[in-house]
Each structure stands twice: as C-alpha cells, then as structure tokens.
Amino acid sequence: NIAVNTSWNIIGPSQGKDVGVSELTFDGTPSVGSRPSQATYDRMVVLDNGVWRSFSRFNQNGTPVWIDSATGQPATYDIQTGVGVYYFRYGEDPLKVNF
Image (tube, rainbow, N blue to C red; front, side, top):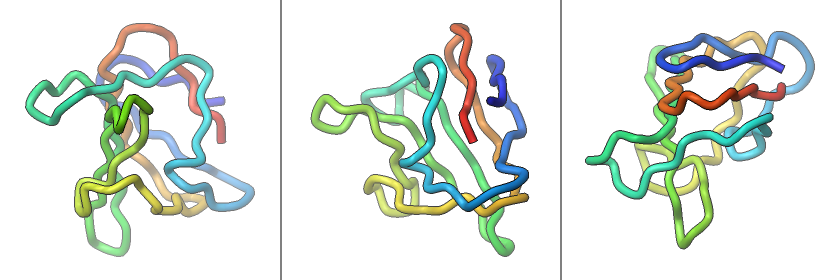
C-alpha cells in the first residue's frame, strides 16, 4: 500500500506484474468529479516512452471510473512495473493505493 497525500505524489508498482489503471484498488475513496471544469477530482499522469498520459476520476453514468484524457473513454492503459506515476490527490481523507 502506498499512502497518497493531498496534492502531487509519486507512486508506482516497484515489482510484480503490470496493472491496469482501471484495475487499481484503494484503501479509501479517490475524489470524483462530474466535469473537467470543476477540478475537484483525483488525477494520474504517466510518462510513457516520451508521451504524457493523463487519467482523471469521473462519474460515468453514476459509477466512478478513470477516464483517459486522450480518448475521453474509460482507461485501458497498463502501468508498467518500475514506472513512476504522478498522482494528484484532491481530497483530504486518507487514501492508499494498492499495488
């Protein structure tokens, strides 16, 4: 478990298998937004072979999901073992990411 504090954090799987963004589990609840203009949601950013990938936590039909900013669709991206992820925590409640 990796503790995530309010503001920017660097997290990522250090060993084991790759994990899909949509497969991440948490102790606590990531902040969820209803639209990008509110900016009251958790975000993740990954540098993948020189390209920045961004994911935001939104409600989609009442269900919280990670949305890929490039496609506007639910994230299908796999976080590679050993890759750092910049995680922006909007909320103040305790949160841990399970890798």
